[in-house]
Image 1: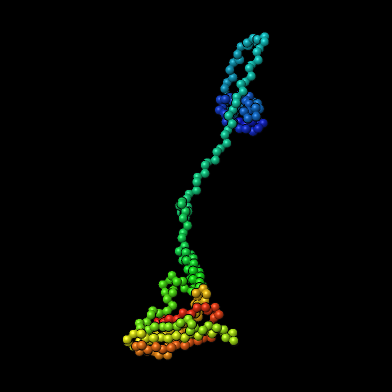
Image 2: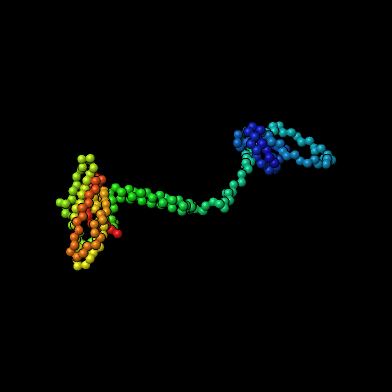
Length: 243
C-alpha cells in the first residue's frame, strides 16, 4: 500500500502486512512526524454465526499498560527518473574530422594575375626611368657590331655642345667613315646616342651617310647637328645603328 505523511506529504510504499488490518502508528522519515495509519480495506465477507460467549475471566488487580507500538521508518518513494537522452544521429552532410576547407583555384589564379601585373608595371616604370639594366641580355647592346673594313672616327674635340641664344640646346657631331679594306663596302646608317650624368639614354637620332658605298681606301666626312636635345645630356656615343 502507499501512505502519505500528513505533515510534509512525503509518500511511502509499504507492504500491507507492516500496517496490518487494524492499523498502527508510524513516523515520517523525512520530517519525523508521527500519525496513526489505518490498515488496508478488506473485501466484505459473509457474516458467520456468532460464537458462544467465553466464560468470564477474573480481571487482574493492576493491569500493565501495553507497550507502545514500534515506530516504523518507511522508505520514501523515489521519484521516477527520466530516461537518458540518446545522442543525435550523425548528419550525412557533416564534415568528418579533420575538416579541410575547399580550395578555390579561381581565387589563386586571380591573385597571381594581380601580382604579375604589378610586377610588370613596376618593371616598365624602372626601365623608363633608369633604362635597361646592363646585366640583361641585350640591355647594353645599343649599337650594332662593327662592320668589316669600315672605321668610324668622331674625336671628342670635334663634338660641339652649347646653349643657343634662344635658349635651345645645340649639339653638333663631326667625323669620318673610312674603308680600310680592299673590297667595296656598303655604309650602313649611323646612330648617335646622348646620355645624362646617370648614364641613362636621353636622346637618339639616326644619321644617313652621304654615300651608300665606299671604295677601298675611300673616306667620307659626316657633319650632323640638332637643336632640341635635353639639357640633361652630358655624354655622346656614336656607332652603327642596329638592324
